Image 1 (tube, rainbow, N blue to C red):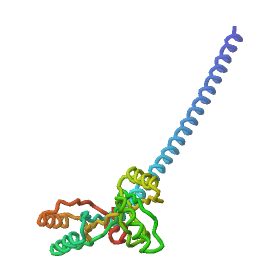
Image 2: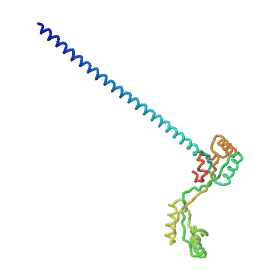
Image 3: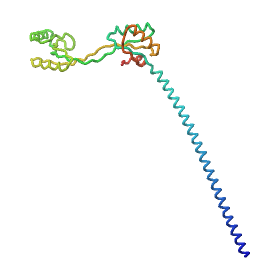
Length: 239
């Protein structure tokens, strides 16, 4: 009976020891896990703060670059006023002088405008003026419209007609060839010179008001637009 009691007592002590060791082991593992999690959290926080600092620094640098670019663009891209077109140089010069009286400096720009070409039907130049006149009289006797070309590359040739429509020119060409004349056709480029007035002063409110006053006084209902001042200073072809 005594041995049974002692055996149960020893068995309970052994079970208690095993449970106590298991509990200590679990608490040790839990503490280690907490330390690892805390380290990872701190590391992540440091990384995030570093990233934020870098992003903020880049944002400040980028903002500075944009501001400098805008400042440079605003300095280079100033606008002046362009007025026209005028058919005669005298009209443009008159406006320039009127603007000068209002303390607005300006300059006159001539510009060639390409127009639709014309088509010239003709007989090629003769060896002399005398020969050309004889041929002209022959044409006139036959009641063919013609005249002597007295200058240019076709000098001493015979003009048979100048047309704006190429079909009309080709019809006359075929007709004269059928009548025995060695007629030719030539495309003649056409241009028209027009004049524009551009202010040298920047198109601010004061300049625009002075320009409008001059245009109203001279009753000029002309086209007015903005143009880069640097285009005027460089003398490039205006739009």
